[in-house]
Length: 327
Image (cartoon, rainbow, N blue to C red; front, top):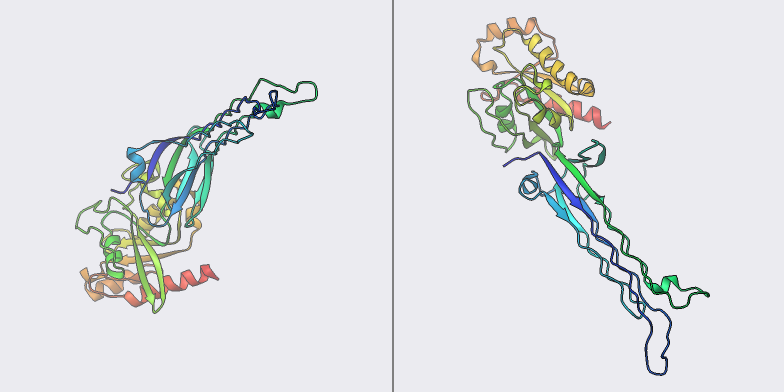
């Protein structure tokens, strides 16, 4: 199951209490204070794991607490500090404070890590309070409490290319044709309910990661259809591919609808480099296709993923755009 948003509670461990103790051994009946400090409480740490692709585990386990530090001991023994509680999350996870919306971390690289809640410091033992005036202090400090936070985890897929289009525009067919990914494909809207990723070979030793984003409808930026649930995944793509069915009554207007929804959700999306692809050209006679292409911008690409028409031009265009971005 693909889960891309969860809310969790985290609590770091408390610090261990300081110890009240006095040195006692044969022939030293009145030894000085030797109470040690308490150990530090465990931190709660998030680590980006490239082997994970969903936040599913956090859906059923929403509370995480690190252990507290051990108390100090006699003979100036410091209590053992607690081990951290490690939360493994998919690469591309955005972590925010739930109440304020403040971003704590954007774990967009494998093995990236961040401390979500810091463990409390251990309290001082009575040896710490020894002075020239008071050489037998009978007090110790309690350990400090660990941090507690309510967090939201939001997964945004990372991809080189994001396929954007209306439902049933042919995005899943493109991904299945050009990569080894096998998204569900059917002739009705909203077949794709979760984002799918595939590795697309551009030429020998050169590939890109392509994401099939569930179809957008007018009003998606306001949450209609699958709306906000998947628009955020487009924010992590480097190149947008507008996928439009050639049977649309007004192809340019369809493209404007897609752009408008992206811009209203996040204005920066409209500035991303893009390619416009017209799909399902195998459904029209060659003469009709020529007439339609004369009315549209010259940089539009025409393909049929099923009939393998326009494959080379499609991949060359994507490769060229990605090369420009890398440069």
